Image (cartoon, rainbow, N blue to C red; front, top):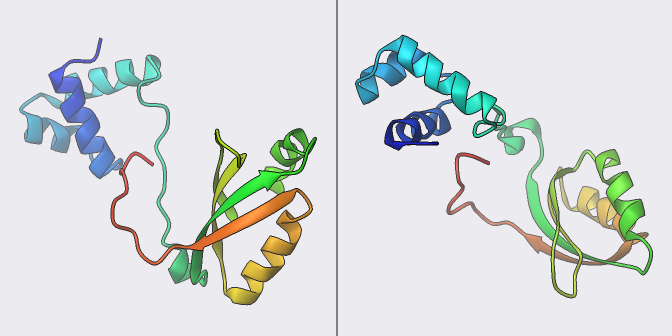
Length: 142
């Protein structure tokens, strides 16, 4: 059972997954060994599933970030789910309800790269592309 203290630990780890147990303990008034024990229990219970790295793709030369809604052609869902990991541009992909099937977040170098990427996706279905202008909220857990 997750309690108030566990939620405080989770909040601190969401802000900085590299924070030490001692620093968390100082912030929430708990000993480092107690923090370590609680984190271990949260990991064992799969409440904490992984620690991740957040990359600023624009600093790696990817100037465009897009959302693409894909309406798959009949019979293409299993093929796309199998092939999705072949596309390095795709950073997140979700199967969704409604008339479209897939929600994609992708990063691309420029408009030419976007065009080439869409040309690959149209083998699976119809695309609707939205250019991301700026981020206004993102859960640190993602």
